[in-house]
Image (cartoon, rainbow, N blue to C red; front, top):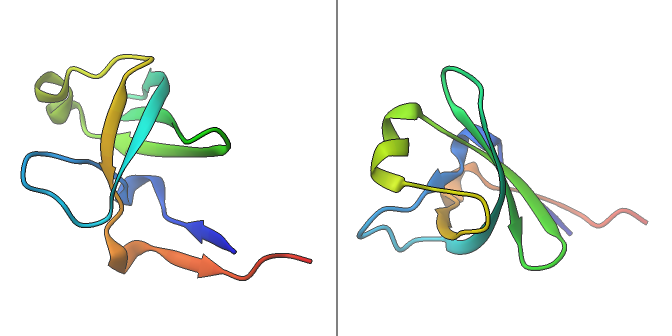
Length: 84
């Protein structure tokens, strides 16, 4: 099974967000202009990319190597069967 979500739908969790929150390690941060691209890793083998608006960067103070909570809104998740 593969679980998919678009990078712009992944959210850095804030206080009070408790639905579908996972911890991810920040591997790299890229400033793209209208957003930051966060290269994340869930566990040992699950890479993930998230986009974070610049206005959230000052309140989040995220840096490489940190573990951050990310929210995966259930209505944006897609499940695909395992490939054979």
